[in-house]
Image (cartoon, rainbow, N blue to C red; front, side):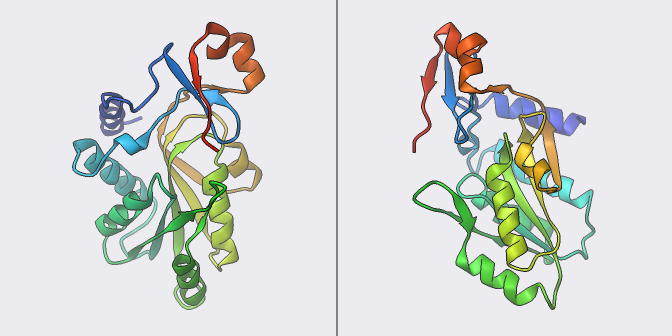
Amino acid sequence: MNRQVESFKASLLKIPGFIDEDGVLHHEFKRGNHGRKMDFGTVRKGMPQYSAWVKQNKRAIRERYSYEQELYIVGVESGTTELAFDVAEALGNFAVGLRTEKLPDNSVRLSESARLLLRNYMQTKPARVIVLEDVGTTGFTSGNVVLETHQAGAEHSEVQITWKRSQDLQFLDEHGIQHYAIIDDVVPSLRPEECEAYGDCSKGVRLVQYDR
């Protein structure tokens, strides 16, 4: 992890409420595991950490792609929707931001406008699709968005994660989806039975259940 990324990480941890306080609170996640929640919703536009968030995503993309490469930057509702458009703007004329939308069951899919754009332009103007994810736990949500981009005609889609909290991103790996991380630093999440046996549950730390 380079010095700029270390500084970015440290600045995130200074934001009140960004991560559950150790020994005080932990959360149930969408896929059922338990752990300390990271909330990028606390990183708001206008904060220096938000500007750094955009900058770090741009830097990571530019390390892989030139200014002439056409890019579609997809935000995952609701964590990185605004970020995707700001990163696309920072990247310049060859980058376009796309939206996803959250369904009543809390799953996420490409918006209809994003799906139509990919279908209409991928055959004549092939581009790379980069799905931005704030926190990488299993890769389930961002991975499903990638699979949707394939259905819409994209040949190359990948995931860029701001904070990869799990050593393995099972869903992405199982589906052969390329992924990159800005911050690669494990923050453990446990299965409920593991949490009861030796995790925060066994210590009486308050659990906030996932809002279904």
